[in-house]
Image 1 (cartoon, rainbow, N blue to C red):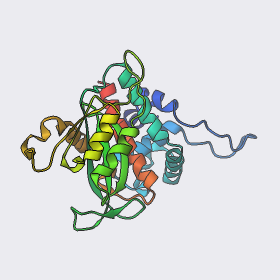
Image 2 (image 1 turned 45 degrees about the vertical axis):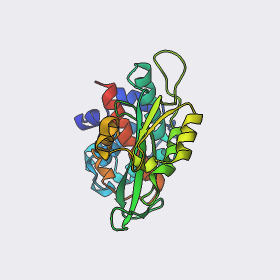
Image 3 (image 1 turned 45 degrees about the horizontal axis):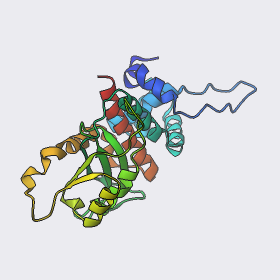
Image 4 (image 1 turned 90 degrees about the vertical axis):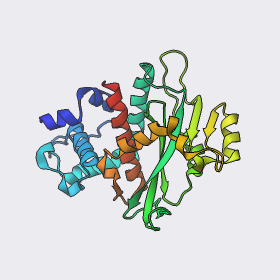
Amino acid sequence: MTSLVVRLVPDELWVLFRRVVPPTEVIRPQGGGRARAGDREVLAAILFVATSGCTWRQLPPVFGPAWPTVYRRFAQWSQARVWARLHRVVLDELGARGELDWSRCAIDSVSVRAAKGSLTGPNPTDRGKAGSKIHLITDRNGLPLSLGISGANTHDSQGLEPLVRGIPPIRSRRGPRRRRPGKLHADKGYDYNHLRRWLRSRGITHRIARKGVESSQRLGRHRWVVERTVSWLAGCRRLHRRYERKAEHFLAFVGIAATLICHRRLTK
């Protein structure tokens, strides 16, 4: 096993990944044929594509499996929601260690240009060019708790309820699992009374900036953590521009980026 594979997929991440990856199906029980490419080598190749931003065809041969094998395994794992389950497993480990701070969470979104595919739309801030939008909720430390994608023309306010509902029940150091933040900070794009009522009905204190009332100079006092997380997502160069035709593949890369962010905190 090459040092590049070990560096991209350290032992701690590999142990967690083995808990969520589907079992290997034996296609030729009688034996013979070409040996199946190892999951760790394929995972390292997928992470290389995600972080470097290269195309599948540009994948270097140092990993072992050919790029069609890597892409096929990526599509299978994306359909099986492996990346979402891996993100949740890492969050569980963080929660069990007391690394998640639920006292102040923040919500935001970022738009990226899209070449093609479903869940795209004209970006109102980019001259109407086709794009997609990444929605996320982070804890007080900036660790992503819930993710989603939509067309770039989707208003930010439409993503609040699905994102809050999408927070999985995460382990805590003491007590039951938790999935509701104490407070939720949001900018003026979420300034709607029905969202405030909905958050109150779920026992979540809202801190949503009000249009024409609050100065924009103080909006980043508690929300800067989610903006920093957006910049962390940009470290996954595959997210600089959407090339995936299928929305589930683009969401998979978003989940991979979020998992790497959380895993870095786990290994500190």
